[in-house]
Image (cartoon, rainbow, N blue to C red):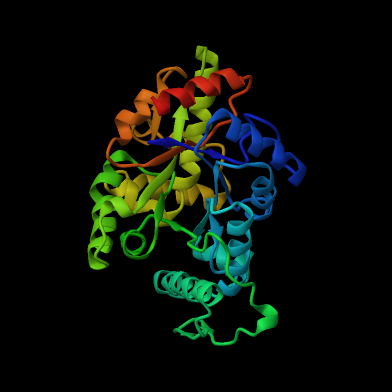
Length: 344
């Protein structure tokens, strides 16, 4: 299992602007992280990776994730092609659908058949890249997208590393099957349990892979894990409540209710959803019991966490990163020990 890190972590520096992205990327590579991922939250997911590509040489770089539907597949194709060339083959295009509300009300994008539409995005990207690399006439015609025009003035030409891996993120079985069938990787949502990965995610990925004549080993499965760690009781308690609050936030979204249903906690999702609708954010964490916390998070001293994560995710994950990696006062030396434990 490889240990990755999010670009926005404050373990190294603030990630509020592009100048700091270079510092974070170099530090992550020097310390030995396997990959550096950038989410689409408060900033563009691609621009910091362009900076990172120019100052690193070995660490993989990816979006975790970029939203698929607010962007044309053609726009995604150009950006990914440039990042793949700049990083000399180290870029991974991570895509996700987001939920209906954000697509419609934050991006003003029509919400329509997210699974089939994401399939078309993936297939269209591969057709576009094949056109650029091999000179194949551009001819993609789908239900949602049509691409038939590529003139020399807009043709970027071939690159040294034309295979751009595509990862997708999701929760429901259909997205898992899509990842198994068409993608190089799958990002499990942070709101997961080992049981949900074992009983729902993996079987569906394997089913999709079988349909395409592939196997589980052809798909890299990754996630951000909730980790509660600290050097003192006070620090541990502060992190525990921070994680509890984040779990409550995610669990209030009904899209993720199947994860809770598997453990008989579906009613918690409904209560949290009601509280979120009323803006009762501070009281939501009280709904997350210690039993739930034990399923969703790993708890231990920093030196114990690598072995705990390996034990929890053995056979389930190929890559993992800490959801909260901004532990106050955490030193570079401490990170190096954690990374070395993963590599050992």
